[in-house]
Length: 104
Image 1 (cartoon, rainbow, N blue to C red):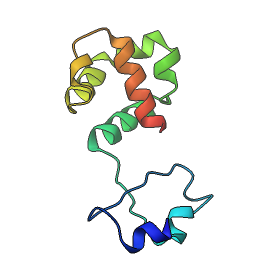
Image 2: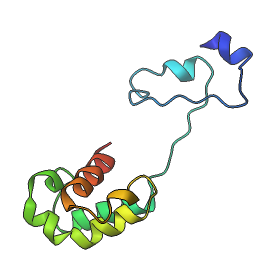
Image 3: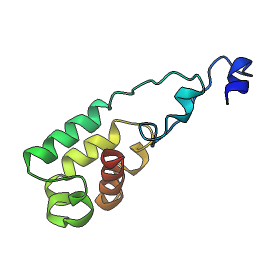
Image 4: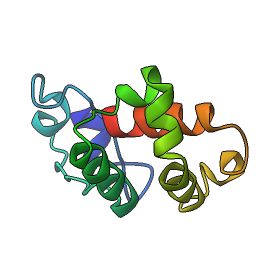
């Protein structure tokens, strides 16, 4: 890694690490840690779940919650190109995508 970073083939090199706090391999190799702020759509959805005393996992297991949150989940899905194609379909895939995003 360090050898590559001394003469990289591209102007920017990125690495995504879920375990960076446990094993700071990339930082020790000379890369700069950049914290990414959560998307507003995720923050709003998380806040609503907390207001209702639920967790993102509840979107996967509670059909009544999915029904109660349907409008908000569809709005959430429409707000990003990656989830826009599922925004008008069944609510279950939207709830799965939202839960996965909030849990990650």
